[in-house]
Length: 144
Image (cartoon, rainbow, N blue to C red; front, top):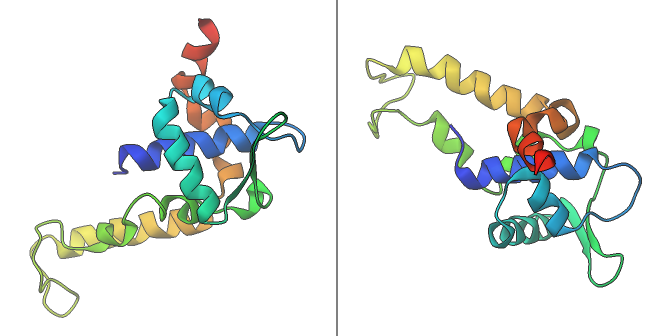
């Protein structure tokens, strides 16, 4: 349901949010603990800096930090930078005229799912998801 980029962004944010203290988190540590390729991760993190979700510091002691507490960063804030979430509300059959007034045969089934998904993204923070969202990615890295 989410693009690979959006999934990677969630993993990165969950890892950064889980780090204790106010120390910046290195890209190499995020990559090693999330299974996100470093080159791909750099683009994701830089996009998040431009979006105002992360700050970055270069050099020794540098890395990435959340710009606000993880309890204040909603999933929609993160994902909307990497995925066209409004596209999820469009007709799954691609019917351009499908709407409440002119529904396709699937409209009544899809609309509640689409609305619930959007509501969940608006109500859930990265703190709610936590590092548990990394699942097997973090465990695989730690076993190496």
